[in-house]
View (tube, rainbow, N blue to C red):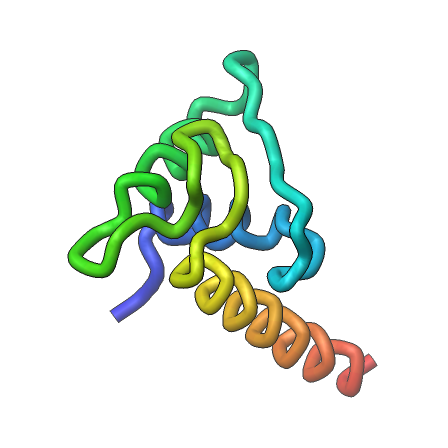
Length: 87
């Protein structure tokens, strides 16, 4: 199993939230990369547990989105630290 291009876009969007517990939202403009716009739409629609973000064009993280963003940030930091150790 591996990440799909759609998964990558969604993870990249979650990483745009500086600190997942922050009260700062984001706004994705109509002129943004269509990949980012589509990722936001998927994260807004969510799934069986609800959406990850509050607006179709960004907004704030939901409770589920906060958890997902925290995990995305943690995984990124872990992978980044591993790369730094090799250098």
